[in-house]
Image (cartoon, rainbow, N blue to C red; front, side, top):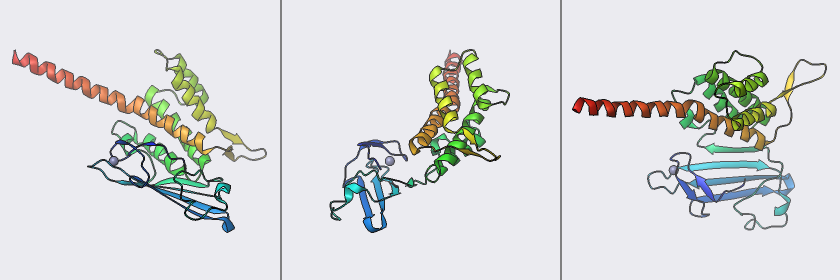
Length: 239
Ligand SMILES: [Zn+2]
C-alpha cells in the first residue's frame, strides 16, 4: 500500500507525520515460489490521550522489484503490491466512519454506505452498486423527489431553486456511471462492469462528503442557531 507522509488518526482525528520505527511499522512477507506477498502496516497514534493502533493489510502477487532481494532488503515501508486482491484496514474494523452515524443521517442511508465500505476490499463491483443505491436514497431523502431513474433525478437537481452546485452534480454523475449496471445479452441478470479500487473508493469518498454536507452540517447549523437564540433570550430576560 502507499504510505502517505501525513496521516489522520481515525479514532481521535489527530494528524501526524509518519515516522517509521516510531509510529509506523511495516512488514512484507513475500514468497516468489508461490508468487504471493502480504504487506502489513501498523500505525500507532502519537497523540498522548489516544495511542490507538490501526492495522492495514494488502495481499497480492510477488512484486518483481523484490526479486533477488534479501529478507532484510524487502522490509521497505511503502509497497504497491501488483495484482492486489485484498486491501483493507483491519483495525479499527473496516466499515463506515463512525462519526457519520449521526442521528440526523437516515439509518438506511448509513447502512448502505457502511455496506459499500465493507464490500470495498472484497468486491469493488458490489461496493459501487451499494454506493450507487446509497446515493439514490440520499437524493430522495434530501430533496424529496418522486422516485424515478437516478439519471433523471440527478438532472432534476440542476433545475431546483436554488440549483444544486455543478461540482455536486458531477460527483453524483461519477457515482452513477461507476455503479452503472450492464445488461448481459440473452440474460436478465445485470452486472457491474470492471471497477478499479480507486474508482470504488472515490464513490465512497463522495458519499462521505455529501452525508456531511446534506445531513450532518445542516443539523449542526441548526444547533448553533438554537444556541444563539438561547443567548439572546438570556440577555433580554436580564434587562
Ligand atoms: Zn488518535
